[in-house]
Length: 355
Image (cartoon, rainbow, N blue to C red; front, side):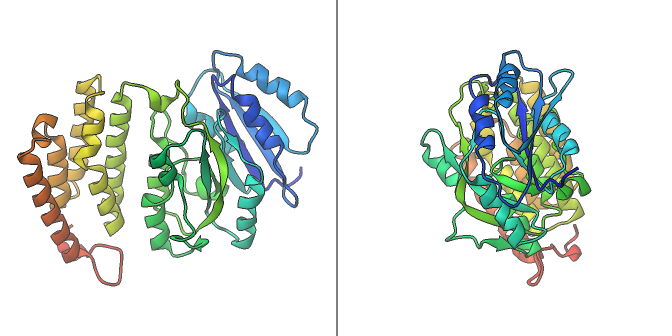
């Protein structure tokens, strides 16, 4: 059995109109000097996507190895990715949503950085949007003016994965053993699974490289996408789960970046943006209660204050009189606490602070 250098993972579910272009974008990739496989996971959609997949593969004459894995029933995007990771043989994996496509030269361009920087955990590329969107363009940009080609400092790599690279599974290569050795599989049954993955990966990340070229074509205006669902209940619950996980990591490793990350996620604007579209307020309030309990267990006063403020009814927490006062107090306590407890030569909080 020949050695595989790179595994392209494509979950397929109800993408009949897009999947042929997706597969062709893989087939057309140049891969001189490295071997590529493509794992397609049939997640049991209700349309003719897999008929298109099989018809397209029947016409292929190249040397990329294509493999189809069939789920017995629909399990969701995270499960499909996990299935493929366990079957993958590549030293690196890259995820490709079946309604998007790779741009020419994507695999070769990113792979060359794994040769230049052996053992790099992640290679991050840039994204090209199907429809112009200014805020998304900024979000997906990884600028050579702001970032070096490779970061090997562990503390800096943690900050980068938490705050500065796009929160997507795609447009990057990930070292497969980085996933398997650290049990970094995708949480099944939740949305915002990429946010959760980045948060969990931050515990172990040591090296990130950047390929400052668009590698991924993102269809950012597909009407039936998960993120386009007008009911934001699942989204809200997932965000509370992410904060809970962040507080767990903060309790284990009370560092500045987890502290800042939790405060960022607890910004009241994040709640206001979703709350009106949450249809099941009881489920959402239960998720808030779970989040508040997790934050309380950190025994960190500014985080507790932020969680309590976040938990107030929107009519109160966004009141024109109350909101400025609460935000000013929170900012004051948070800045004081941070300056008091962060040592000058380490990212870790001082344990003498009472944490």
